[in-house]
Amino acid sequence: MNTMNHKIQKNHGTPSCLYGLGFVGAAVYFITQATSFWAGVLGVLKALVWPAFLVFEGFKHLGL
Image (cartoon, rainbow, N blue to C red; front, top):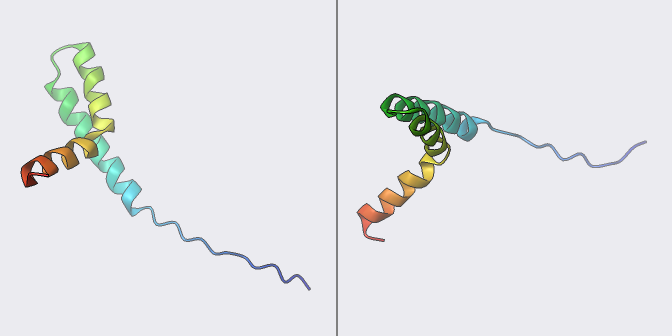
């Protein structure tokens, strides 16, 4: 009889899904605001790190 303990791992994809939707929305926003190709490329890069901008502005607003 095999008595190995199997660890059950639950993977909830909600945070990943929300980040993905946020990425798509931010990419669309930044790309539509772009006036050149390189501004569009920069917009995609900004879309990758939009949570950092959000937290930074939130901390700045709170005076931290």
